[in-house]
Length: 289
Ligand SMILES: NC(=O)c1ccc[n+]([C@@H]2O[C@H](COP(=O)([O-])OP(=O)(O)OC[C@H]3O[C@@H](n4cnc5c(N)ncnc54)[C@H](OP(=O)(O)O)[C@@H]3O)[C@@H](O)[C@H]2O)c1
Image (tube, rainbow, N blue to C red; front, side, top):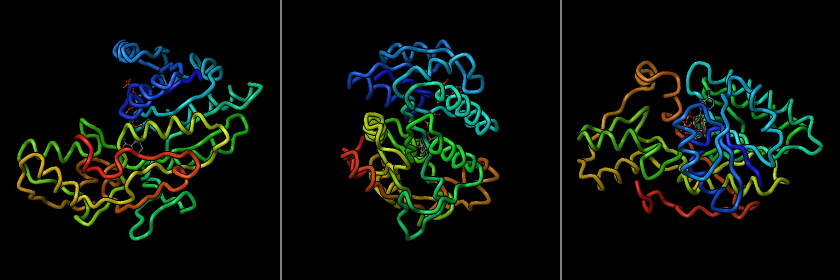
């Protein structure tokens, strides 16, 4: 398939670009700099210059692809507007195609809010953290458009060899500082390893009949206490920690800090049964980081 990835140079996008190329797909990556051009070319993908916020220049190419994956995010105050602008243009352009465009949109576990003792599945009510509420609306817009055949993936917290979701704790360990726990030491995170997640995206891309929401987690809810204990063991840290209140982290880091402070469990039975997805890392303890 000819696939266009928006965000192909990012944390998840890099792994997906490599996964798709390994499986014989042609990959084009939206790029907004020389550095991103080089990164994409080094992986074997073709860069296409463009920015989420001004889709006029690249959206025609998007609608000519066999598949499109949205993994780009500005992570600033304009994040919602940039995503909405790009998605709206893609849907309008795709409406001119004879066949719907296969599209994978990215949501995230934070759209379910705190789940406590429940394990969120795709039927669970969405209660997104405030600064990501727009993402639920855009997912709905994509899923209801006849111009695309769409699946929305909700990745769990993504970790990888360089850290990802574990980065803050790894940094604390490197500096021999107490682990900074946000909210509560009883907090649980759903987890997925990055390359496992990339495989989930590919399997869904290759199955255009599969539409709707798909959660992607290898572990439903791992206590952050278990994660810091494992990092302490690997890095010679004494395991000491401090708990920061939600109010403290929101003030210090901004509204997004509500996400890692959520006590969440999220299952992925639907993805596993419909695509055959089996994460290689069913426990984070067996992975490199
Ligand atoms: N990582 C996680 O744990 C996780 C979990 C659940 C959901 N998600 C969601 O997954 C998506 C991707 O996350 P990520 O962690 O892979 O993000 P990331 O590493 O920050 O990557 C963001 C990507 O977006 C591109 N980008 C930024 N601004 C752009 C713009 N104005 N126009 C075009 N491209 C632009 C970046 O390109 P440059 O190379 O130019 O910087 C980069 O490729 C996000 O929506 C995130 O909310 C992530």
